[in-house]
Length: 141
Figure 1 (cartoon, rainbow, N blue to C red):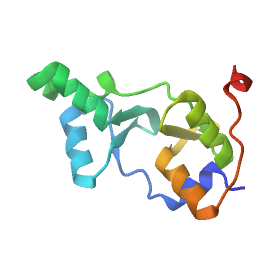
Figure 2 (cartoon, rainbow, N blue to C red):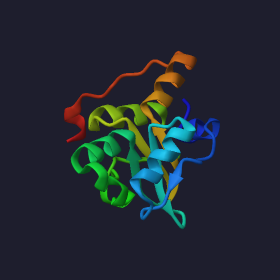
Figure 3 (tube, rainbow, N blue to C red):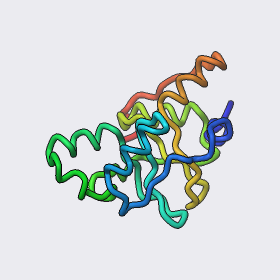
Figure 4 (cartoon, helix red, strand yellow):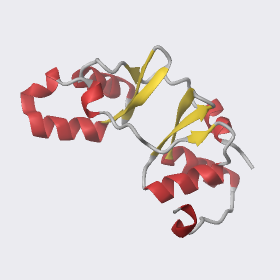
């Protein structure tokens, strides 16, 4: 069965990065230029989280014009469940489902490797005709 690193190998290197102290407007500009729905918040090879288009919109609604003064680190999403570089696609999908998220940071030991999305997994499952069983939630308690 394919592993998380196989999905990362077919994705372009994470060009969609900003630094924690970059403004939300900088992030939105990058998202608009590259047609992205999230950017990775990273500095000096240290992963901090992700900043989603949705989080930016919520910030704009809440803060209006003051959004230009808000830093990425103030509204980014951190604390997402993570998967390991060698985890199977089945493990990745189960992790997304159990935690009700659509983004998964991938690490090799303590080294950040990239982000796998629900879209990446669904596309891989469709292309590979993978069949698997989703574990019931009570096994993860």
